[in-house]
Image (cartoon, rainbow, N blue to C red):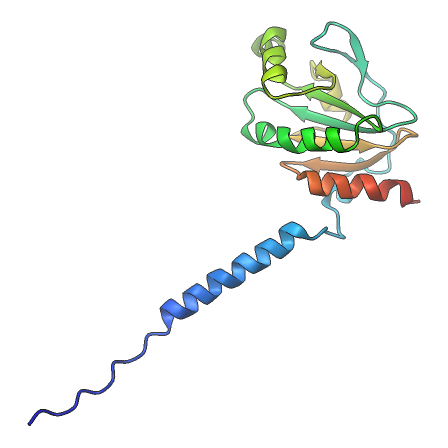
Length: 186
């Protein structure tokens, strides 16, 4: 006569692990699709200060302003070798399409002059669909705006006040939300 075997101990770990993964996924999706009321761009040290009125040479050999008085402006600092900067391109293209005609945009290349050759920056701008002024900075704009890490994005209001400053990859959703809020802010 054989004795009945006791039931195998249940192993809750696989179920708990799947539940934890599911919970993390839900939390991530909620964070991704919700607007952060504590916009990180508000905490940049230059927010509330006057934007520097600099004109830089463009890849088209004309001089262009970083920001445009009377118009909301987005200034994007980037480099040819910056992977996160390349990942930002679709976000900025979305922003340019969404705010066409109501937004001045300038992309500022920060590569050292010897490394960037205007033809390389021009080719990159064409390949990545940059349809707004692409400017070449020899360091003056980076110093004026305190850029130490790229990508860096600044939003300047119609009066020339820096309203937001972002460092690192920033989603079009975050930038859109900031652009919508700025006209309503004091």
